[in-house]
Structures are given as structure tokens and as C-alpha cells.
Amino acid sequence: MLSKWFWRYKNEPDALWRKVIDALHVSNRSWNSVPVKASLSGVRKTIVGVVDKFKVEERRLPNLFKGVCGNGDNIRFWLDNWISDVCLKDLFPSIFKMEKNKKYVQGWYSMPLNGDMINEWISFRNLVDVVRLSDDTDKCVWLSDSNERFSVKSAKDFVRSKTSVNGRFVFKWAKGVPKECNIFMWRTSLNRIPTYKALQVPNCNFGSTLCGLCNSWDETIEHILCHCHVAASIWDHISMWCKVDSIFVSSVKDIIELSSKVNLDKKSRKVFKCIVFVTRWCLWKARNEKVFDNATITIEY
Ligand SMILES: [Zn+2]
Image (cartoon, rainbow, N blue to C red; front, side, top):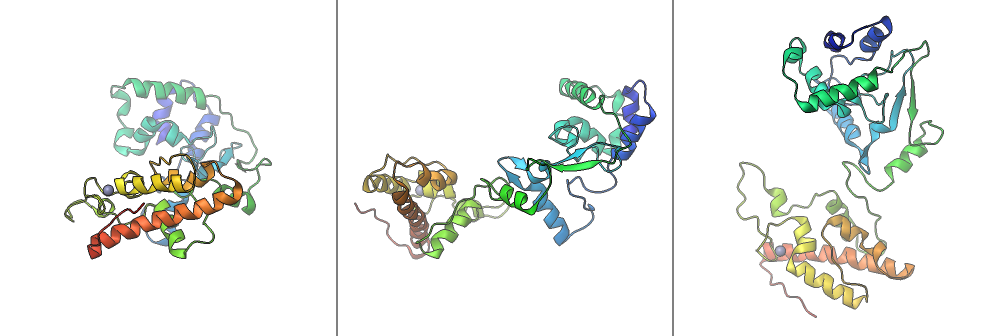
């Protein structure tokens, strides 16, 4: 498919290029980085989906593998990182869209191209035109290690760095606090807290989505733990009690990072972290008590 339209722009196609296109082009399956048939369902497809979306600091796990082109037999043209650190599918989305959408394959050359497509096409040509095949076998290198060899340890180091699945922030569990606090923190970092806003789904009316504590703003986990006047007031008093600078938090990540940013010695930071964990859990508990038991919430100084 790619070759059909590619040759229209490639003035002097040679055997080498023909092989690049034929050998590197993908076959009949889904467009994930990890091979799986689009028609499949079940565990394998789920695993492939998770691996494909796995990110650390906006870097996807599949992007840490890079193909080194030899004879081109094993590298997938659009899906593998081989000619740059980003796969061609992501680098040239407009061209890829045309390639993916089979109804355009026969006739899109005559379609008017907009500026973005022309720019993409020029960049695409500049990048791909320099490729030359050799008799060597294609190689795959692992970019997360200095010797470019994949190892379980290297993969673990990658996974344990700063972010996790879908780019969500990973925190270290606090010692010395009730297990419920750690679990709540963990679920918060995964955005798995059933706030009114999180429970709101299309075509399903749960009624009001206003905060269970203040009844004034949409109830998201960020609102309950950061922006709600109840939370703001509590953070204010915790900062005075712990003798740290005023606490301003706007996201779950801010709260998780709080203990590493306060001006305290190492031992005090650990205690402060426990206080933060317990505070968050208590805020959520207070919300639940008000919502489900109609409890009165007061902030005592
Ligand atoms: Zn509120």
C-alpha cells in the first residue's frame, strides 16, 4: 500500500527502496507497537494495550526500543522507532492517516494538500530518503541502558523512576500510618476515587456533582484535597502547626511532593509526610461522613 503512493513521489525508485517499503511495511493487524491482531480480545489484547501506553516522564516504554536498520526484514516501517527516536506513525500523523485509511490509498494524490501535509511530506522525504539497506540483519537496541542491551534490572529501573502507567505520578508509601491512608494515596494517584464528578458518565444522571463538603464547586479529587475551602483551611493550619511555609497545593502530584519540598530536616520530613497522608485520608473520610451520614463538619483550631 505504501509503495503505491510512495513511488509517485520517489522519482528514481530502486530495488533497495522497494525492499525498504516491502520489508518494513506493516501487515494486517492493529496499530499498536506490540503485535496483536485487531480482532483479538481478552488478556493478551489488554496486556498489549497497557504496555503500549506505559509511560515514564512522557516517554513510552515501546519507545525505549530502537531498531537499527540492516536489511530491513524485521523493522516495521510505521510502528518501530528506527529512523528517529519517535516512530513514523507519531512523527507524521497526517501521512500515516492517509496510509492507514485504505479508501485514500488509490486517490489521495489528487486531493488538495494543506500546509501541514506539505510540511510533513517534505520532512518525511528528508528523513527517509537517506536510508540505505545493507546485508546485515536488523538489530534492536534498548535505549535505557548505556550498553544498549535490554536487562530485567534496566527495565525495573525504568519502571521505578518517576511516573507510572499513563504517566501518573508514583509515590513512596509512608511508614507508620494506617494502611488505609496508604491505599487511599495510591488510589488517588491512579485517579480512582469515586467523587461525584468521577461517577458522572454520559446519559446517566446522578444528580448534583457539587462538592460534598462545601456544596459550591464540582467535586473532583483535586477540589476535595486542594481547592475546597475546608481543605485550604486545614492545610493552612498544618503549615502553622508544623512551622513550614504556607502550603499551596493545586494537584495530587503537588501533595505527594509536598514532603520533599518543605524546609525540614530528614527526620522531620518523614513525620510531615505521615501527617500529609493522614490529612488527605481524613478529608475524604469527612466528606463521606457528611455525604452518607449527614455529619456536621467543623474545623477546630
Ligand atoms: Zn468543596
